[in-house]
Image (cartoon, rainbow, N blue to C red; front, side, top):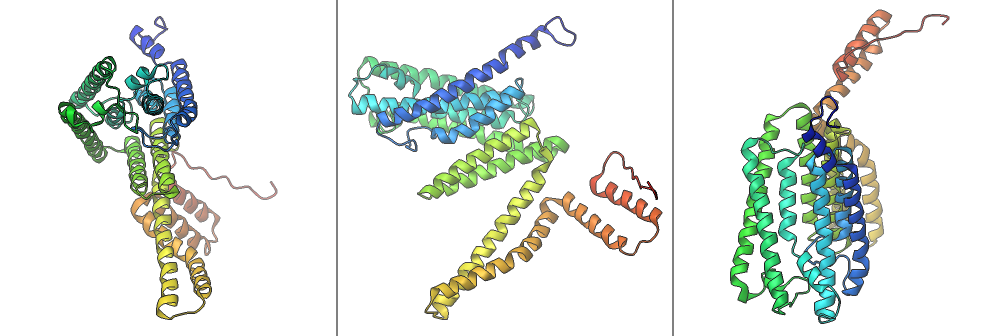
Length: 408
């Protein structure tokens, strides 16, 4: 590799370091950790949705898939490796939490290698560090500019100090037989719940505050970059913003207890991971305007129809005092069905005008051409008008029109 033209020894080393084999190894490790969560959860008498210092493995899995695909297709881009490593840390923390609960709370230290679980469990701050790095290094795996390198060093320093410090506290607790853990499998000394460890509780707050400040700075940098960007880079940032908005909406709805909240939490993280993957791989990158406009359009239509449905039912049952609620439900259903298509077309037109201007202008050009075509009789004029309309709507590099002659 080093002897080939255009490939330096440094580049060859980078290729070996970020090879598809490494992606397969990390992907296999994710699968093993995800599979191990099932028996470990049973051993700890907990569910896979238990809050044990990390997200459930079934929530982390979509991000791991995206990280594997990005690392496999673009091994030089560090984002794929960061996502994969974050998935490994998250699942390792989850499995270690289960085992720590089973060993130190249920079996009173009778299981083997419980100390390994205690060492592997503290990973919450590392997860925040890796998430912040993903935002900072998006989309090509490099900082936004050389001025942002200090944020990378802050992230790296925070993660290193956190790892060394928590490992030292954990080893000291194991040697001193102070291995009490809470229901999440965390050492009381590290959980922030032990009033005797006031110095660590203060340090924990400083760690989290520092990482959150860097995370907010990374997001602000991406917003500023979006305002200065254009073309492909702007579309990539649109995908990132769309995924972030979906994740925030999913997390907000997840506060509602029950299956709906859990499903929205999973959907939000899945959409965020998918958007990051599309932006980095640049697959169907310029469909983001259509995705946003359709999502907003159907969300608005759904909200309006739900309001109409609920209003009709409430009017019929509470104001008009209908004795048969089924009649009110039937009337509300018919009204919502009748309004769907006209309302969808009207709302989608308004949304496209604001969020998908290219498609809105293209639809107007095509509609105007169809209207002129009804009265056209000159073939040369129709051909010129067709070429002009295609050029304005799609902006291709070249337009040609072939017309079949008579008898051919």
